[in-house]
Length: 226
View 1 (cartoon, rainbow, N blue to C red):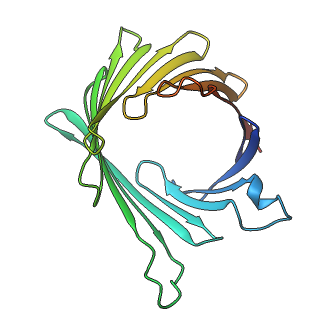
View 2 (view 1 turned 180 degrees about the vertical axis):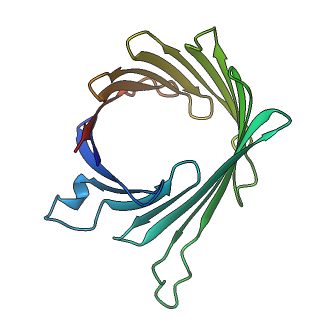
């Protein structure tokens, strides 16, 4: 059994979450995740998520508190010597809607990625009913693929997003992002520890209103074998 504990500090707000993963029959895996909401006022179902998954095939999430459910199915195949991966995600609520209220809306998303070679990949994402899609190109530069450049275009917002990541020996990585629609500039430093954990510090600048103070986020993750 594997356990993951994550702590997050954002401004004056601190949160925590834990996940337990237990192997099931065959390749199946069962996970239970809980945030601090599950223990804030005594044990409760708030913040609890139950997951049954088969990596690379399907995933089912259920939140017992409000009966929100998410179904995800994945598959991939070689098409003209290119790896094509498809992901179908459907989110809905299993709770009956009280009359005369309408049933809660369902959300369905389709994701397709085409890997041309180890350095070049294109990803298409579309939410049904949105009328648009997000197209992202990923380029990994160099023999060791340590630098990754990811331009993205959102047809709904008619705007670009950019991300550049540079990895270093020892597990360190630096990432910069920019969202043209919101004029948000993000900088992030992360480190993966050989001891089974990771640490991340990120800050966001609102270039549309320079009077706003940058938002600072710190996050730590620890992995344990039980």
